[in-house]
Image (cartoon, rainbow, N blue to C red; front, side, top):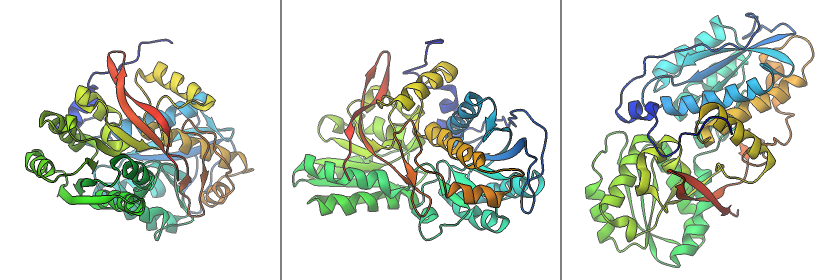
Length: 404
């Protein structure tokens, strides 16, 4: 299958991220065509559309941004550099690590680069911070990661769409399964102390307790600051819990999983989590410490459907690594924009794209078919996954579809 895929070793981009270093690269990707008019009140010519990409290009979130860029580029390249039959010009801007950097970058895309739509965004705080800007400018933002429930809830907008997930969902999908596994025993709940962690635990506890589960204890660790989890692991060991449910991602996920195994808890208490705990470069860094961990997510690389077979083979051949949920969400962002643009005749405006997104039907995705809800969030399946050996490395293998 072409070049050999990199499995089971820490990717260079994750070495930088886990060390908290900033990558010094900022690129602008272009796929044919010349600059066209776009943005508020503007339009595009009939042959080219200008699409903005707002992602972290440096810092701790850069690995997610890279996966997202790769998924987006793969779809566009597979379609001859076109969406909806029109050449695509991509203009990439750096989201940075919060609204203070992302808002000016988004304004530039809309006001100076005059794009007709934007995709990307890793941070929920960023998505909420730019919501009004996109709504008032009448430019659609197709979010391919940020999971704050509010984005497709109380803060929903005609111009905000999401192809990834809401934070509560993968955790809520897991609650009944974990309750069945512990059979009345208590589960220790631990997560990073920030909005995503609180939303994740809220989703889990709601369905877990409804299914008869009991929370043994609940702790939140300082977000982005906790490196030594030993005090919390001591508390878990003394709690009498039958299992642990956590929510961590990125560097914190690596530290927690490694220390959980080193402390001896991996052999005593099953560890469950939303799939971000062992996704992508985090799993590469965790290595053997992650073996056997079961997670819930909307994608696994080995899903058995024709769309995923094609996507996985193409992604591995081009990027020499397994695809992640972050790459799939961006691949699907391109797919829904493709559908929307196909239905538009003549010049293209943001208003037309937003209206056309509302007419997008089922998406034939590597994750399985899905569709938008009334508030523009994916209605999708979630899967039970388990970390297993794969060749010289590791993978999140599908166990089965989660119910509910």
